[in-house]
Image (tube, rainbow, N blue to C red):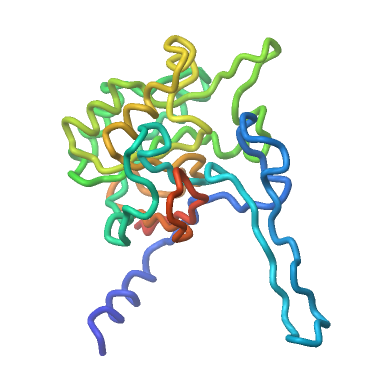
Length: 250
């Protein structure tokens, strides 16, 4: 028997968790993207064609649609786009920082360095090359885009997320490789409002790191010890692409 086959068989003893949302023509996307940008599974070759009996579809979607990966060139002009990354760059040790209770009590909550140090005191230091995911349980609001955004009566958004200091800690101190979250944006809403910019997302991408937005089901993954795999269509020149993401966890 092959050692790899044995390893695959052994891996099936663990729990495999889907971390990406299913998408259809009614799935929401950022309001800044023009209407009509989504057209999934449109039939262009139907059954009954005498030339070839088969079904073929076309797909139109924004790069930042549903659970998606962002590449540096999305916010950093001239930086790497989708074609830069090999399969070896898309599997990581997974760290899940749980701020769901704090987010339920304060929808504007921004994760702090202290939150991360509390995690490390319990589970050990974040390993180099890790994918650090922020669990807020915000995915349970999908696909209600207003609920995901936390829009209030005045049109102001309220959603938890990252602080710049927390990102600086995971990248500059712990040497993480990527980050992710269940919300639409990297930045906690008050951070974005204060700076009138998505400074946290800009920091991640300007430092040539990867991120995945709109993750789901992080509450089904162990906080430490899991592995995350990120996949996406091999389209060149993309600033972002819908992603199929899953974790293998104890």
